[in-house]
Length: 337
Image 1: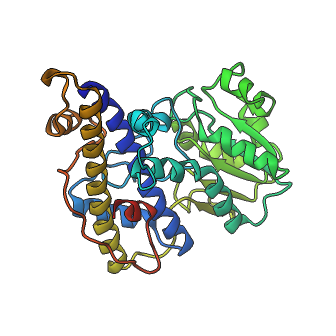
Image 2 (image 1 turned 90 degrees about the horizontal axis):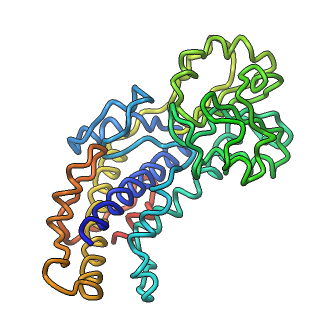
C-alpha cells in the first residue's frame, strides 16, 4: 500500500500544483500581470526554483509550475482519483478534496484558453486556427489525454476552421482516430500555416522555437500568435502581429500579490498533506491486515521526496486562514481551509 500511495500521491501532487498555478495565472491574465514575475518571486521565497520560465524544454520542478492549455498524459489526469477511489467508493465526504478540485480546475484549462484567446483576438468563430503541437508533452509523440485534442473540439464547436500540427505524432495516431480528429491533423508545416489567421502554440516542441523565423515567413495571412506553453516572448516576430499567451501580462506584480500567493501556497500544501494523512488513516483502518502493510505518513513523505520533479510534502497540521488579495480567492485555498 505504501508503494501505491507514493506513486499516486506524487502524480496527484503535481496535478494539484499545476491547478494552483493555473488559478494564479488566470488571475494575472485577468489583470494584465506578468505571471512569470510572480512565479520567480514566489519560488525564490519558497527556496524552490527551477529554470523552466526561461527554458520551455526544462521539466518544471519549482513550487509554482508552468501554466499551459491543460494537463495530459496517462498518469496525472487519473492518479489523484485512483488514489482516493476506495474512499470515494465508501461514500466519504469529498466535497472539500483539494485533489478532486485540482482535477476540475485543470479540466477547465482548454475552455479557459479559448476565453483568454478571445480576450486578445476577439470572437474566434469562423477563424482559421492552427494548433501547433498535438502531443501532450514536448518533443514527444504521446497524445494520451492531450489537451490539444480537447481544445480542437471546443474550437470546432465554435465553427472555427481547425488544423492540428505536430512533427512527432503519426497520422494513424489512435487517439486522433478515436475522437474522429484525424482529418484535422497534419505533419506538413506548410499546410498547417497556409491561410491561418491565428497560431495557438499548445506544445513546447523545440522545433517550433528553432523554426520560428521560417514559420513567420510562411504565414502570409497571420493575424496573431497565442502562446499556450511559454515558448516565446512578445517581441519574437519582428512583425506587427498581435501576441498573447497564458501568463504573458505586461504589468509587474505588487508586493501584496506576492505575499498572498506565497501564503496561499503554504496553505494549500498544508491542506494537501492533511488530505493525504486522512486517506492513509482510512486505508490503514480498512485494508491493513497487519503491521507490515500499515502505511506511515513519514515513510510516504520520505520516499516521495526523492522524486526529481519536486514532491516534497510538509507535515500535516493546522492551516492559517488566508485573506483575499485584490479580489483573488483561490478555490484550492477554500478547500484547504
